[in-house]
Length: 82
Image (cartoon, rainbow, N blue to C red; front, side, top):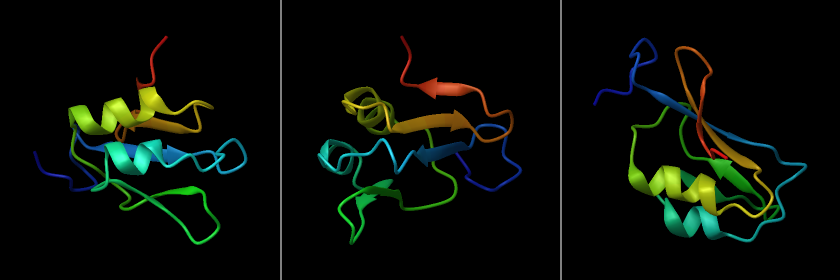
């Protein structure tokens, strides 16, 4: 899957840095898409990401739901889902 900005299948990883408590679960689950910044909080590695089970799992694992994954084209929430 292409991750060009115009690609309807591209995903956007968002981190609410106020909610993030820096457990590192997301970075461990999806190291290609999320890293822990110098302040100890999660940071998306790229503006756009390809769909992957690891990325969805990372969002589902976040204990504070600080990490969310959205369709880049529409903003629709992909993960975490209730």
